[in-house]
Image (cartoon, one colour):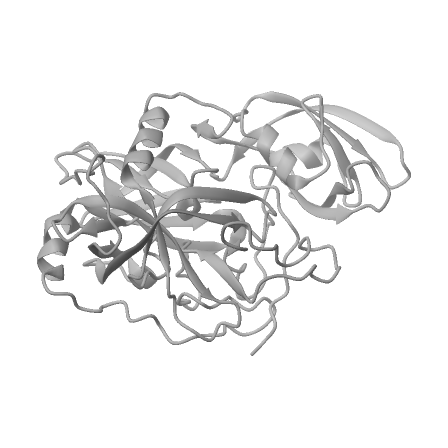
Length: 409
């Protein structure tokens, strides 16, 4: 098995590398459940990992369909080969599962995101909320997207989609299909009781294959679960709480799909699953966001109510690649080091260069790519923002930058 190397950390809204390494970036990594110890050290620092659990949690993210399709429990080998594990038993049959799927399938969509700055394509699932084409999905399905195409399962037609907004911390996004009408919809059971031991079916665009959604049957094995999902590429993380746990065998591409009760009620939005860190076993536990919470956040996005966690509309873009570096003895202990810039975009035009350290954004001191991403959450393309940085000689610089249009999430 090839050993994957972590890419430099990239501030999600600050920019993406112009080119993905051979094999693509690895899956978003989720370290620990209910406060389990952390995993690898900061990506791109060249320092060893600080120790971590023997198991990791993987967000069911967008399946890289332009490359070899990975099953859950794999990672695209950077500068190496894709390592495969045995696929999960996704089509496990439960009496009545077919009829349950038949009730919900027409209200689902396959989501395909073009990650232009990563030179890759990804796939996930979504729920149609309105006949005019409002779609609920996970944020990580469209994260990094420069364009999104959605295929409606009910009518088989494909539509370009606009990203209405997203909540990165709760992993929720809302899309609007252009030119859609009279679509079949899903009715979320926002007040349906959910109990441990209840039989469920998870539906989704497993492995990005499209067509009739795959159905994975199982039971609810836990409620009010918490996991911490960390994106290896950006160094950011989301602490997701109140999740439904299931033993239904979820796979990459299922993200944004429904968790359906045996009575045919949509009770959750599939978002994550566990896997062996050694990439040798199939997924054993899946996690879904309770649909009531997902719909409530979607309502805020639809109403245009931005907040510290909700971003409405297009994403502001600096066009800078950053790495998180540890600085012994410094007050913060870390810094946001510039490792690359995209020619012609705002950061490069302002004069930043590899080796510089960004120390302020919008007048706020920063010491990590995650802090920069968080501050940029409130900005949009065309907004002006001040950026302060120090060059390798220690000279301070300050410039006002006009943000460009960037990828989502």
